[in-house]
Length: 109
Image: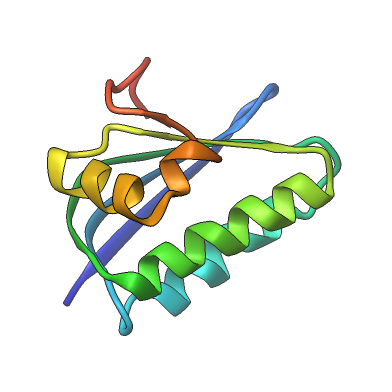
């Protein structure tokens, strides 16, 4: 159970590339790493999930928390590079209807 989180702050947005598994063991590290960026006014965060091999409900909970924090501060969250399996997870839970999800990777991280 391993996760790699690469954060790059740019002028207009913060790009986050995640590789590995997002589960009960790795979700706290993800939350701890990314959450501070959501607290800035009008923050724009793009998260690339193209190298995520597995995610459970704990991982979904992290994304819900990030989404709520960004909304509260006038920011935006975009998820890119979702595999078919991850996309299905967001579809089934209804999160795909409220979050900006793009299965295509745009511009790399």
